[in-house]
Length: 247
Image (cartoon, rainbow, N blue to C red):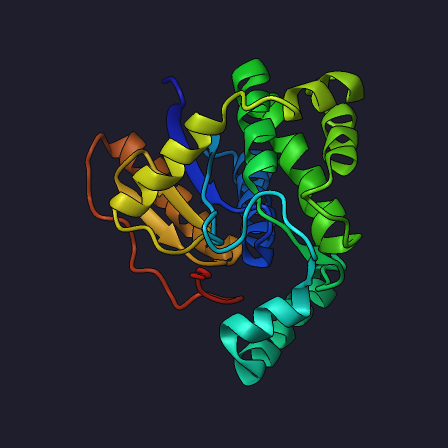
């Protein structure tokens, strides 16, 4: 019997710590289901753009830059941001992933354009390494995603294109309309925060869920495949590391 193909559409924003967490947890679950549980599933992934910060609030290129901590305090308030930091830091310590709030906030349109270019060029095979590297340089190393030099280095590292080609790409408006349209379409459908994982276009999992949640879902889908039935997915527990961020 052929494996069931599970299509995962992941809405994220590269400036979002919870999106980095969700990606890590999702792939931990996928690897466990494939390598350890040997579930009869194949996964098709596409990461879709979402901007937490509207372009009218924070233009793509602006000065002076705003420190992340200052920005999030202004958005959430000092007490809520402190709790958010504590949750993120706890997860980062447990997983050995040194997420931090160092660096500045920039609009994410350019990074999303490169992400779409990666997907168009090589599907998830190129898009995933690009996003993994983007999360690392922004959320671990504190580099500025508004900097073409930073973005072009990531594009070259992930094999999307050479550094020179990436700089030339960023100096055009290629795929900007597509990114804008996809972001607008998501908000028109009621999406106000990310991460959001849409499974087979039917079920949506919101927030920085743990890998255990995804494993439960994939086990259920494998059972659905075997029984050729269509029962509902299991009820989801509260998010383990924070809910979807809406700004």
